Amino acid sequence: MKRKTILDAAGIQRTLGRLALELAERLQGCQGAALIGIHRRGVPLARRIADKLNEVEKVQVPVGSLDINLYRDDFSSAGTAPVLRGTQVDFDIEGRTVVLVDDVLFTGRTIRAALDALVDLGRPARVQLAVLVDRGHRELPIQADYVGLSLNTRREDHVELHLTEFDGEDALLLETQITAKEGRP
Amino acid sequence: MNWRHKHLLGIEGLAPEEITLILDTAEKMAEVATRPVKKVPALRAKLVVNLFFENSTRTRSSFEIAEKRLSADTLNFSASTSSVSKGESLVDTILNVERMMPDCYVMRHPSPGVGQLISGFTKASIVNAGDGAHEHPTQALLDAMTIRQRKGSFKGLRVLIAGDIAHSRVVRSNIHLLNTMGAEVTVCGPATLLPPHIESLGVKASTAFEEAIRGKDVVMMLRIQLERQTRGLFPSLMEYYQRYGLTEERLKLADKDVIVMHPGPMNRGVEIASEVADGPYSVILDQVENGVSVRMAVLYLLLGGGEDVSAH
Image 1 (cartoon, rainbow over the protein chains, first blue to last red):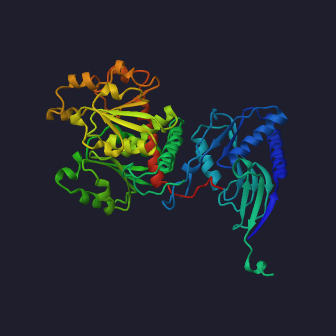
Image 2: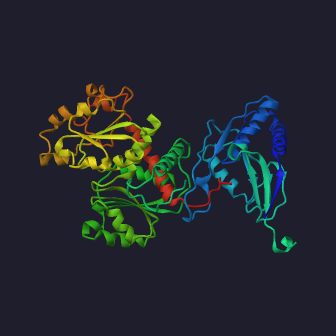
Image 3: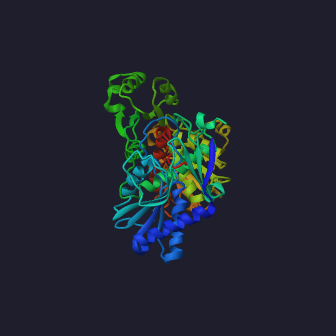
C-alpha cells in the first residue's frame, strides 16, 4: 500500500479559499445563502468556508450540520447502528440557497441521502453542492457545483481527509493498493 | 462505542457507556420531532410487532409513535382481541407471528422474564415494554434522559423513589440504571409496600417519608395501584395521602432545585398533590415527551445496522 499526500495544510487552506471566492461570485455576495456541512468532515469544512466568506466578503452566512445516518440506503441488519452525530440547522431553509458541503465526492450515495434529509427540514429555493475533492466513480447522477480538486483515482483507492478538528492535522491523503505487477522490484 | 445487543430485556447488566449511548442517541432523535416532517426512513421495511398482553395506553402509543417516526411497519397485537383470548399459548402465538417475518417484538406481559423465554423462539429482536414486576427498561431510560437534561449528570445525585415499591417494575429498572450511573437511591413507602431485602439492590430503604425526602435532588413518585387497595396493604387512600402523599409542604424539605417525576398515570390526591404535579418543579410531561425519543433510540440501535456513512 502506498500513501501519498495530495494536499498539505497550506494546500487545503488555499483550496478552501478558492471555493469560498467561487461561492461568493456565483451567489453574488451570498445574500440568502446558507452552508450545511455533512457529518463528519463536511461540518468543519462548512465552518471554514463561512469564515473565509466573512473575511473576504464581510458577510455572515449561517452554517448548519446534517446527519444522514437515518437516511442511508443500505437497509441491512448487518453490523451495528452507526453513532448519530445529530442534525443542527438553527435557521429556516425555506426559500434560501443551501450549499451542501462534504469532503470527498465518490459514489454520490451520501449526497443522495443528504438531499432526502434536507428536504425534510423545509423547501430551499435551490440546493448546490461544494466538495473539497471529487474523486470520480459515481453510482448516481450527482455532480458538484463547486469542486476544490478533481482527483483521478481507482475505485479501490482510499481518499482520506485529515482535519485538525478530528485528526490533529490538515492533510489530504491518497492510499493506493499496489498491484502485484507494480509491486515487483 | 457501538451498540452490540440484539435485545433490550432489562437495564440490569448494561454498562454505563451503553446507557450513555442510548441517551445520546435519544437526544439526537428528539431533533426529528422539531422538524416540519417528523419522520425519517431509518427503519423502512422493518416490521415491528407490538405484543401487549396487558393494558397500556402511554407506553404502547409512545412505542407506536417512535416506530412510525422511524418509518417501520407496525402490527398491533393485544391479548384481549386476539387468539390469546381463545386459549392459544404464548409460544404458539410467537411461532405464528414469526412466520410474518418480524424484525422486532415490543412486548408487555404479566410474567417476569418472559422476554428471555421467547428469545428462544424468534430470530427477531425483543424490547421489553414491562414484564410483571421485573423490569421496564425504556421507562427507566426516559426517566434518566429527563434527569440528565435537568441535572447534567448522575454522579452523586440524591434520588428518592416513593410509593408502591413492591409491585413496581419501574422501580427495579430505575434502581439498576441509577446505581450504574453513580446516583444514590433511597426508596420509601409503607412497610407493606416495601419488599424485604430491597437494600440488597444497593439502595437505602425508609418508611418515614419526611425524613427520606430531605435534601433530595430528584423525587420520583410511583402510582398507587388502586386495584390493589382491596388487599388491605394500607388502611385508606386518604390515610396514604396524609402519610406518603407528595404535598407542597413536604416538597420544601427537598433540595431547592428538586425535580418531581411520575411515570404516570397519576392519582392526584393519592400519591401526589395537584399543585405539585402541575407545579414549577414537575417534569412529568417532559418524561412523556422523552419517552418517544428514547424508544426511537432503542429501536434504531437494535435494528438500524449498516455502514456509517459519516465515518470517513
